[in-house]
Length: 147
Image (tube, rainbow, N blue to C red; front, side, top):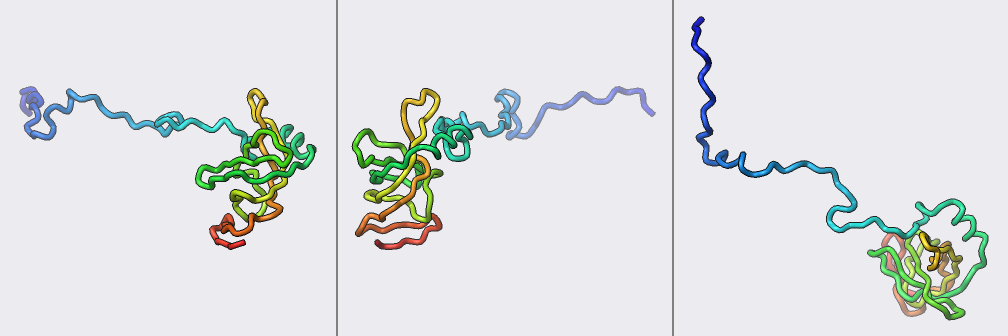
């Protein structure tokens, strides 16, 4: 047993470890929907819509219109009402049936207001009644059918 103290720690001799203490250490962060300019959608989907809004919409009248546009990758589109008026927003979760809507499809739908101000309307329970002639229609599973 010797009474000598242990030797002091030696400075690093590897080139790769020099300067590590000068740089800030990166933190592991949990994924956040607000990081990277990804903001959660304020639009009510079938899943996030309140029960009372769903009941009010289902008890409302059925309207007719024509699909103005629909983008499957974005998950939304617009319907032009048969009686004129402003276009109605359509979310992918509110489309009933096996086909993806395309421009020119005739549809029936009910309407629900979009919170928080309830100034704009959204189409719900959308059913394609007539496929647009001369266009290719895709099913939700990816099969393409010509009409």
